[in-house]
Image (cartoon, rainbow, N blue to C red; front, side, top):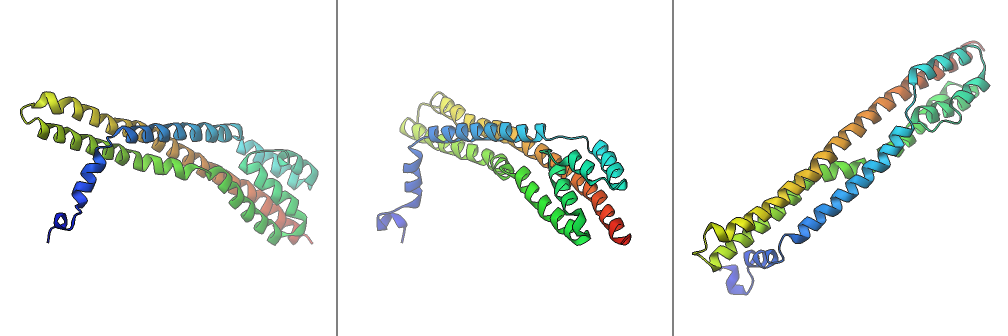
Length: 218
């Protein structure tokens, strides 16, 4: 038995919902756009202000650790804000306690720093992946309304549905406008994070090699 005979039609319910129009979808896209911009600015400040010269730091660490000068090694990384400096600083502090302590502290520090740099990036990825579909949803609502107008005025033709369909397509355009920079920013930050993790592991192995050397010399 058709759902209409029971007093409810899911299709009619959606048609009634579409009467709300696509304006709220546009406002949602605007809100997502501003959120994306705010996250990009906040993350860019972190990534830009914590960039270091890893090869130069590696040379300084090798020199100080080979000379057994832990004070100099601490001075190289102790006041740093970058991922590489903070993880290596923890590893240098654990150096007198042996290889196992260095390995464990390096792993925990790296996990902590990855969370700090990875913060909010999942939101950028979600916005980038889903904004086009949100915009398409607004377009579908607009097209439904356009055809409802045509149904109410069957002789109207293109002059009735044309402007309404054009307005509906704006939602898809705005969705792409939000999604493209979100995806670009997400990929850029992820690539930078991968580079910093690689640098951190490279520098940490210098400290780990020194720990092995110290244990072997005892």
